[in-house]
Image 1: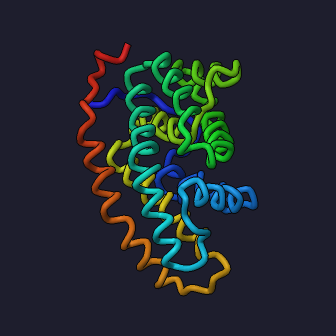
Image 2: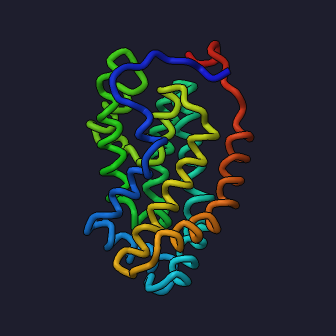
Length: 220
């Protein structure tokens, strides 16, 4: 079974019950710029209707969410569960060099730092304190994906549910952002979301199943 920890303060439900924090960040003016930058980085036309939005999200799933973001959530979860801070920081630094993430880098760091800081009240969680110290010393970026995974581990939340929720919330956020001001009905948006989320939910579930369980004795 997964390593268990005592927790305090922050309600973890906000990570699983609401849209993903990055999606909320992308709803700001900075987010609109990030969306335009991301479509350009993926060599896609600007989002102007359902078809261009569908193409954008499918490309995002294939080139960013599946190969980079979901594995990053898993790595954050696994390193935190094993108390592997050195490995987490090394991977944190590797993510900074990934070109797929550059259009979202500023938003990712802002959201990740905010939510990592919200774990500060967990005074007896040494891993969180050391990750915060690495962030304050400039040795870590606290990407939102890694902090999301760390949070799942800290609160002993189920990895499979967390990965699927991340994929669903991020996809929903992009649908909402992409149709803003276009006058589409809510039922149309829901249908598009349902179309896009099925396969990626299966991918997230299989990724969680591939993770080896971590016993309490292995977390030193």
